[in-house]
Length: 410
Image (cartoon, rainbow, N blue to C red; front, side, top):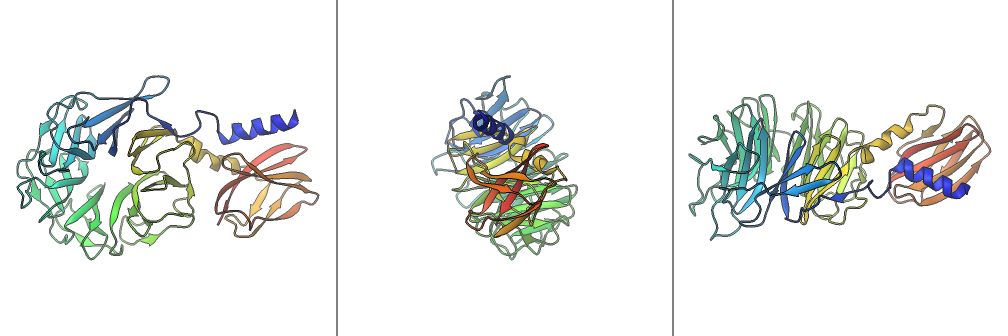
């Protein structure tokens, strides 16, 4: 009975019930390139030529459900970028086949039911197609598009919600822009082909300058105040804490640093989507990373978005969702000041200080019991050199009850 009760408590703490994992959004089957959030609705841009265009993910009181709102007028081959401001939803498209309709930007003001072509002045490639739109960013009436294609100029700008466009690349010697981020009047452009992986503009795209981010392909940018995270194709994660002026790598625990496709920030919590290995999370602003894929059967992540208490992942088979606190809530397990674990993160050995004799158990994040130690001293050293790198839980049971803490094995 005690054994069953113990594991019931552990499962409750870890949130590993049927619902405490990644789940497929009901009805979402289209390959998904991009995500955007408006209130409690998540928009998913699909990649199928002449397919569903943009799908809506809404909560019906029991589960998240995907639906097609209509998409009349959206004739691009595939939706590769989305941006939302007020009632305006902008979609960037990509030319997947020469015989299809060219790329460019579209606007919907009725939650994707109908779309209007917004490409007046948008430059064209040598094949007379609009540029492929890889990223969109909006502030006020200003819309920025990160582009690629033959003779691409990197970034195009519209000052009037897409009514007309012009090239905005003064100082930007990066022809292929995969990612954009806006923080006030500061714009960051990440991509490939320049002397830096990230360029910065302090005047809404009027002028650009290379940052200290190395010459590496940048696929994604996320901003939270002065903290900026960039996901790269071959160098993992770069972080900046000074609004993009200086950069440094942050890859401890990130076992797969190639193909970071997407990033998202929620306070000090950072999430990274990868090409083949699902989602990684850092709960300390990039200091350490761990895999967060429980229940996720499609590990090809194309996009990430946070909507309220949920995190969404776009994949090659549709959209997945998980309760955010199931990943971030483990930080709350370390609040008991009477029990100390150090060092944390740990390489080989760590010490536990407890006020009483205790029974110590080490458990995987999936709930598997690995070690049980009966500690007769208030300071106990535990060897964890045989454990693989990642996040683990430790329970310390005394006469006063059981405390659960998290530790990271490097």
